[in-house]
Amino acid sequence: MNFFSSYLEYNKGNEVNPAYHLWTAHSVLSSCVSRHVWLDLGYFTIYPNLYVVLLGPAGNGKSTALSSGYRMCEQIGNIPLSADCQSPEDMVKMLARDEAQQAFVGPDGPVIYTHLSLFVQELSNLIMIDPEKMLDFFVTIYDRDERYTRRTLKHGEQVITRPCVCLAACTVPDWISKYLKTDIITGGFTRRTCFVMEDYSDRRVPFPLVTQEQHCEWDKCVAWGKQLQALAGPFHMEEAAKKWWETWYTKRSIVKDQNVSSFDKTRPTLVLKLAILRHLSTSLELVLLKDDLELALELTDTLMKRLPDVFGCLGRNELAQVGQKLLSYLNKVGGAAPEKELLGLLWKDATPAETMTIIQQLINQNQLVRIPAVPGKIARTMLALNTQQL
Image 1 (cartoon, rainbow, N blue to C red):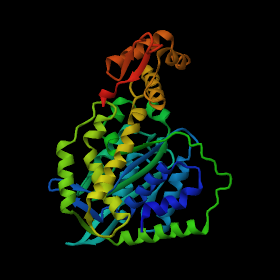
Image 2 (cartoon, rainbow, N blue to C red):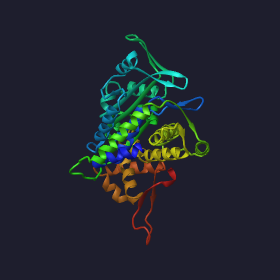
Image 3 (cartoon, helix red, strand yellow):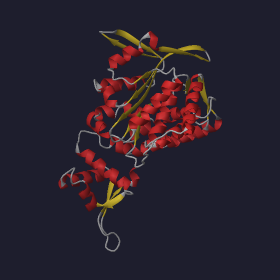
Image 4 (tube, rainbow, N blue to C red):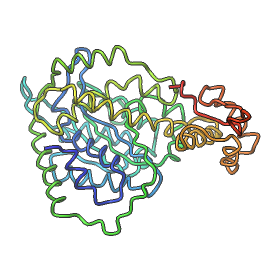
């Protein structure tokens, strides 16, 4: 059994980018195992709950991918689901109720915990009442080990026992740039969230029919999810995995790009979470393998490649969005283009003087380099991405 392969096989008949389906599949697995499995690192305990945000232009299939994951969780069953817009106060009130608690039998006996999986079609609807408070709640509860306590004059003390919140949501880049300003978005939420950035897909399926074989793959996923719910206990690393992890962790370097470095600093936690899920997609044994860690690292690499597109437009300077458009264009055309061509590209977004200011600022930040024209070699002055920045 390979849960991810079966999940992607079922969804191959629609026009949605496979990356959206793959990350939604991770959210489904995360919802199945909740806090039933974990990795003990002494001072820290890693649980495989995830925050996943599918990011891209309107109409590119984000909601379709999310709906597929939500339906699968419904069929697997025994997964507390929510897709409602709630304030932080309502969220805490709901999770603090006795009926919100669940239990499983671990190696040392019964364990009480509180689980909620949110599949939200539009992230803005979830946090619109008070974005800062809601995001702070998600940050605080993300890796809370024993309990979360909140005290208010209206509700008194509210306790959430061993919380496990899984979040899968959709939104568009413009919403991030307009509403999640630097003082909010560059905090803990971004370091804990998998932002899956994809553009429009040109794939066209006039008759998105589901074959009998694809239905069988769906049924396999549902049956596997039910089996995973019966698992409980700690993960252990095989010796080869331990050696690989120690080498990578101690020798890895942090990227210098300010739009990526914050995420990269805390990437090890996400790698371990994803490694657990990758392993559980094919095996019921609670032993992490070297291959699991390597595949998880590759998966985070795909996220980091698009993080400059996700966060490059943030900040209080509106011209930063224009600068990010320039960098994204250079990424698409191989890293370099004539300066005159880029000035023409941005004429609708900024005046010539503003564009020159943006270019100079990017050069000062070591994100761009200017390559002067050389008779007989380079016909025009070029602007190129600074490959030494990463």
